[in-house]
Length: 266
Image 1 (cartoon, rainbow, N blue to C red):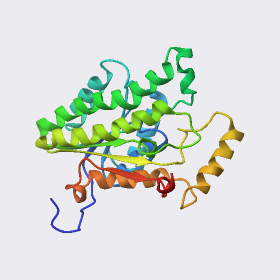
Image 2 (image 1 turned 135 degrees about the horizontal axis):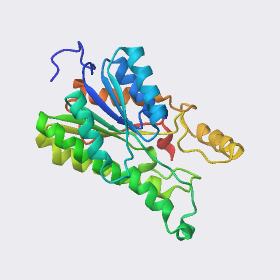
Image 3 (image 1 turned 90 degrees about the vertical axis):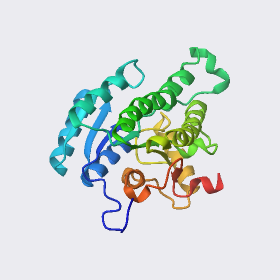
């Protein structure tokens, strides 16, 4: 509980686990927490890249940073990584569920690949978040509390056009409500659960495959965004760091949208 604004937004000394924290928005989040003095735990599948990023972050910001290889969709990996990180760092104070997948497909033809574009996205973007949260929450409960922050999307609240991304949008809507449910259920353990819902952001996730088509879509999206630009990863990270700080101790079960006002007219 804060009593003054001095250090109210600090996360110094906290151990923060970020899934997919070595690229895109996740990298922005990792760097932001490290700059604030937090120790960084990154989970991902790309070992060489992840270890390089963790080493660079640790050296640049003078914090402890380590990469753990793991696949959120593989049975046993979430629990294993959390156990290994807990043994190494002594606690997991903050979990940021950042990893995600998007697929563009015509929903009426979803059976053509045996619904893989539905199942693959739901498994990573919603089910894996629940599983990761459960195992992290057990450690937090035993330690007296913690913070979980889910990275969702404004697509969980509106129909973004002309994207044909029903599995992605449905998963984000599901995680938004999961956030509210877990916030209510886990408040008794002093675990706060919130979400940050980005709009169009400077990252590799979300683009159409054809660069020409993508540029046309981007022009449309930016024209419909009141600020007329994409988010920077650090701007998403700023909201995440705030939610992890003591300044946000009375905030739980909330979804903070960061999209330059795009959803206002969509």
